[in-house]
Structures are given as structure tokens and as C-alpha cells.
Image 1 (cartoon, one colour):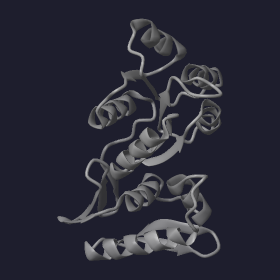
Image 2 (spheres, rainbow, N blue to C red):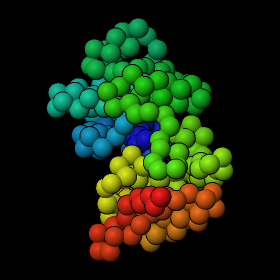
Image 3 (spheres, rainbow, N blue to C red):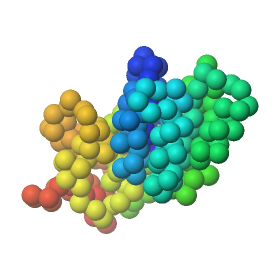
Length: 224
């Protein structure tokens, strides 16, 4: 799942990014409303978390602009304000849920997951291809009773493949979807993670492999 977090408190944004990445989300984080609008309008996200009070554009203004442009991505609003009028304003602008600060991260992620289940873009919890299954809840990749625990980035790469197993993904596309537009990571990090995934696929005895398509990228292959 790909998540956009727009929060002007940088320490909180960084903490939420780490928390969601540990729970198998790919996260982009921004600290002002204009950036939130630019990223959110791409339509690349499964969910957006918007702080109400941000510089350049408020969370409400960002949400109104996104909805006016037909962006239906589920949106969770965060704010230090707890008055009923603020909640009503957010819901009227098109918010899907609302959580006042301070909050517990566990409650936030539960609400985000519930929001995703209600949304049009909800996808089945358990992903499968060939003899392989991938569990978003645990980050486990399983085959024939054997399992391998994936790191956050490994999970995100494997999820990308398993949601579209017949698609060839270039290294640049994987980099964009998993590490984000503004990442400082080098492109060879994609190869490193694919190499690690291949080893884990072999370790659990799966006949699924990540095949290189020379000059184009990578895709899943199942050899029965």
C-alpha cells in the first residue's frame, strides 16, 4: 500500500513514516500544503493523511482541490483541534475520517486500514501467485507451509509484482513506487532487494521467480 503523509511537524512526520514503513506501507512525507496537493494529485496513493494546519495551503484547501479534480483517494484528517465544527468542515470537504491529536499510532493505522477497506481501491488481504502467497498483515511470504519474513522494502517490492504479475517493471518504476520521488537511494538498491527476494523465494521452495527481461525490467515468472 502506498501512503502520503502531509504533516508540518517534521518530527511527527518522520515518526509516522517509520511506523507505517514497519507495517509494510510505502510512504512519502511532505511538510506543507502545496507539496501535499502536488503529490496527492498524482493519483498514485492508496490513502492520504492530511494535517489540517499546514503552511502554503491548509489541509482543508488541499482536500477541496483534490476532490474538485476528481481524486477519490481516501483521506484521513489530522488536527490538534477537536471541536465539532472542525470535524464537520473536514467531512464536508470530502474527508473519509478524522482523528484529533494527540493520538496513538496503533489507532491511526487501524483507522487507515478500515478506510482502505471501505474505499473503492480496496484489495484482498492475501495476495497469491502460482504457489506463493503474501500476507500484508504479517509481511510473510509463504509456499507449501514454509515462510520467509520480508523487510518493509522487500515487502513493498514483492507486493508491486504480485498485484500485477504479468507487468514488466523497470528499475526506475520500482524505485519511484517503493522509494519515492525524492529518495536519496541509488538505483542499485533495487537490484539488491530483488536479489534478496530471489534468495528467500528459493529458501521456501517456491517455483515463482523474479525474472529479468533484458533492457526492460523485471516480472514474476511461475515455472510449474
